[in-house]
Length: 69
Image 1 (cartoon, one colour):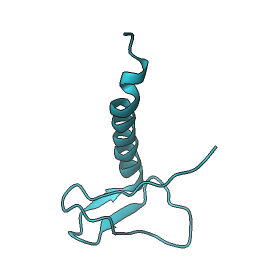
Image 2 (image 1 turned 90 degrees about the vertical axis):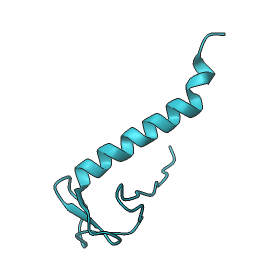
Image 3 (image 1 turned 60 degrees about the horizontal axis):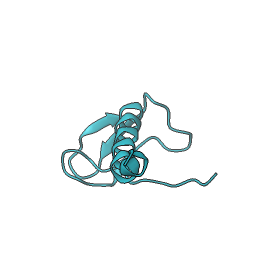
């Protein structure tokens, strides 16, 4: 199995740079702060939003491959 990384982007300003607690693995309740606009979101919420974006992208990309003809 391979691992891929995706870039998160701020929903307010589009920045992909965030500040977060360092020195340990991020927990769902940890807060990410956008470097562009200072908007804050928890790691858990950011993960949910990223998972939904990936699901939509895969459905759009692969969805037609499995439809009956």
